[in-house]
Length: 520
Image (cartoon, rainbow, N blue to C red; front, side, top):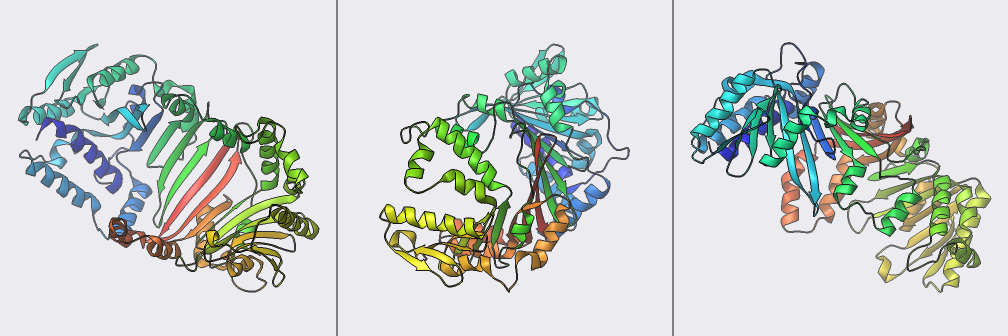
């Protein structure tokens, strides 16, 4: 086996155990060195994972492999492929005898030095229960290779540098890999001084990760921005300020939790500062049409919209609107943003259709009352007429408002209507009016929607995608060619998705979300 293949082989071995759950340990966690203890304290991304899942986690991974891929024993299959690939390079190995005996329970990978939309350096570490056996394996693979490797030593730690600069060493109960010798030495220094495991922001963020997670991804958002150049353009900063996002000091953790019939990703972040978005708009979401391919709902939109408009008005829009002129200018044109925002509660949206011809949907705004809803639609219509917008037609059947038809807008008209306390701004008359239906099924009547509610538990649902409907629509919209061929290749697996749901809530100054992918 060529020296440059040692790292891929070992990382593939980790993937085998992580994905397939083979080779479970007898005594639970090894209690070994935390892989994050060799990551530089300023590493913006760190992925920690359980190498040897056990109990329910292992059973769930095996069930998912059977359901999604139809494989009875994924671990054995991957090991066979791994050993076969190594043998084809001229130097085979026995995974069970040469890797599994010394492989520990936990592993981690860090990424740093983000430049030109890519990471320039990485490091990885895996716990080992037998440093001697791990060293023997690495030495054997290098010695049997047909390319030269250089021996080195740094602060008492021996290592090998391969021709592609990949550096490998074993110390502190860890098998350590780095993209190059300089990064490896950084990891040695981190193990003896400041490191990510001892960083307060990392420790605080990762402490909230669920115990049942198979992998956790930590992101220092502020650090990532700094690595990318440390600046956010003015328009992006205005948007972030509008929605209350403060990225400079923010962190986030995403955790992967396998279930027997679902895949869950939990996300927590302090991205939104001291007052993360809260509330529950699940009632609005559940009232949207059952024919929705995808739908979402957001609570207390008017309050956040008003706060955002105040910030934009104060700052202005560079090159377009001077500071303190936005609200004044629109009010003179008949649009009172403050009045509109103060009358709006929850907001939702949905998409319907199974082809480009039938594609439609609407944005739904819940007003405080019937009068506010009707007045808002009337004011929008008045503003458009003042600007000379052509193609406006009155709508009075099913709801009151108007539609705008134009070749630039496509086959369907844009519809702005109100009924009761609900405002709908949609594409296509029928899809828009569907949000006002008195009879007929809603998402709350859908079996897969009910399943998603059960999966989310106490977390309020904020978004729902029907798997089969989304797959049909995607297949109809993807043009013929290479993309269509790639889609067809993935379709056999995508067909296993019954729904995708996202729930969100706020707790202890953290914005929390759950992504659930239901499989069948």
